[in-house]
Image 1 (cartoon, rainbow, N blue to C red):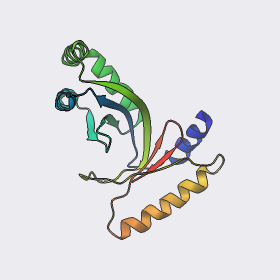
Image 2 (spheres, rainbow, N blue to C red):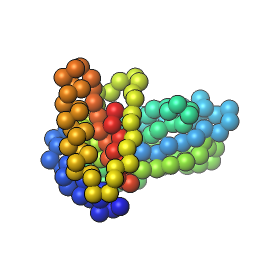
Image 3 (tube, rainbow, N blue to C red):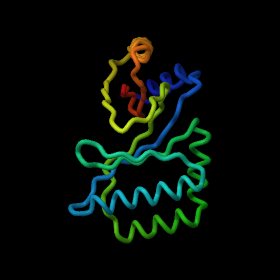
Length: 168
């Protein structure tokens, strides 16, 4: 599976607007939804002060998605080092760990060869691509994205660390 992901990343590495992200999905503890949302906003504020772009969203299950976004894996690694060296970030982590408002239920990395315009609501289709069909699938998805963009849609395509393709 890792070879498949590496091949897909190599295939798509020429996209100028590509992004990478690490996404952490948090399930709020009962009665702590607002606290989890507030913690995410505090973390986001600290990250933004350090020059790190962050995405925060809530899915249909009520889970919070927190993602650090970078324009390359190199930039992402630098962001992680910046966070590790930040006294504000370390204070936040210590405070959150002493009274967590949710539990981490999933983490993954995403490569986004086509980045959609940020909207308040998105519809995402997730595809488990058949082995050996990644190139064909990505070519078709790119053609669909071009067609839908001409119709006025904002389209994004993401490939996660399992090689699954998410099309929004």
